[in-house]
Length: 236
Image 1 (cartoon, one colour):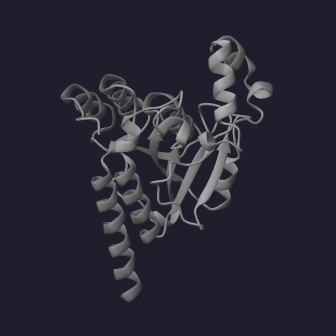
Image 2 (cartoon, rainbow, N blue to C red; image 1 turned 90 degrees about the vertical axis):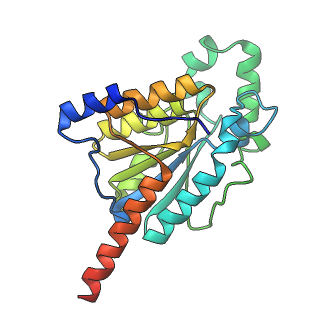
């Protein structure tokens, strides 16, 4: 995993802005979801055009985080990028920002009948989890997916973001979620980028302006504490 630690300069700026280091001292699982972005073969498996080798390293943490979220009463959501509708709804990226060869390989590998579209096989996905397809980097931007409607229909207002690539689809999704007034946390050891520098830059910027950055252990501890508190209230 990426050896990330929040820099002192980032901590100082966050504390100066809001008076404390983290906005979300508690995580109410009943209204929370782990959103796992693009952990598909195209981005995770060896030999695919979009391969991010570090994505394979975060799989155990993603699985552990999903298990903890479900156990606490929250939701696990798996986002998959699809080629269906990509050219029609995001043509400039497909046609102008990719070489013709890469465009064709990307569309072919992310076709829903392709192995590249499938979630990476080491992920522990359960039948009751929510699965959502997206077209663009962000799952929340207009025309990309039905994620916002799906979450709102379930009363979810808090998102923990995991997946790959940290500084592209994960960060784009997390930023747009915050702009839609969700409470958003990026999990530093459940996200993967191509380099340590790109990973750190994305998390630093996110923490300074958009939401919290935590480790999986820190998030799981908050989920457990909230569950214990809710259990004590029910017994009282």
